[in-house]
Image 1: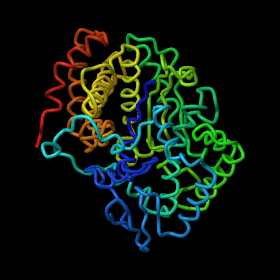
Image 2 (image 1 turned 180 degrees about the horizontal axis):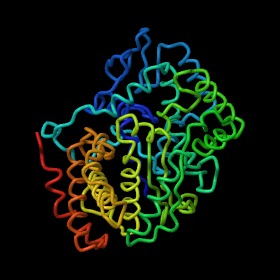
Image 3 (image 1 turned 135 degrees about the horizontal axis):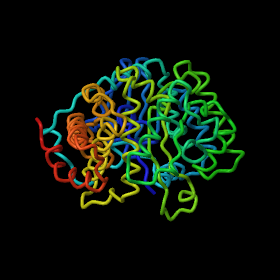
Length: 418
């Protein structure tokens, strides 16, 4: 199975959420990308100390906060003893990208050679978590709750389902851009479903029960109790806005289960999913005019990679992921700036490539490393330049030709810049 969660890494790396387990959480706490925190928190080893003095240790799953401790005790009473292992297995099985530090393996890139600093997206993240009770963040992250909308869309969503319909404000733009991409590329995208994910699943006991039962393999009765606990946390904390806080859906991803040996996964349709949170973030960082279409171009680029088997390479670990992400950056910008694609203004698109390079990450040793902001901007700029050259003859390069040219310049994109 192949799945990309392009935007999740920025959130997960910043907050140490999304089901960090054991030593992985300890690594996350000290990883270089872990720079974003709320003003009310300080970091002490693997633990976060809130303004009220309570400690939240993501490595051990312990806390001095009585509310969070009681909730987590209830969670543990309803789950099997190996629930953390099952959580990790679900991440692997369903292809949901884990925290950047959780897979800190493979060949590390020397972080001292690269420029990487907090971005406007970091500031946006700070803002959306500032009013959330730290105990709510802790409990939901231990349970993997911030991935629930992603799982829900992946496992149960469909293009024709009203629960996963694109919002009215984004529907026309994204749908027309999606159709343009289907016509532009020399791949068959007719089976890809364009859909959305919304945070309302976090206040829906029935949907959460179904989801938790699948993720943790527990009886429906226990899943229902856990779902009720999640709903109580989400609806009782004003900062979570009943699940509508963008933290739950700050993501867009492409998915293909073709060829996966798991029959459940292989039976799922190809998808391109937009979260409400990522659309809100793009507006907040000032690229709402072209950002959504740039993101769509990037994610559709992943579907081109799926179709043409472009994920395979001699690279491993963070370098392998970085290659596929930078390629999707280049492919996406090629499409959105090409006159036979979306024909967007190149200058404005490159300015708006914040929708790519603002989520370039500093997790150099992570298997989920997507490239630094500078690297992502280089790849996007290159894609626009190739589009400008190609469109003089009015041609759209075959995807394999574009890939060949990309591979030849990739070393330039990732060269040290510090």
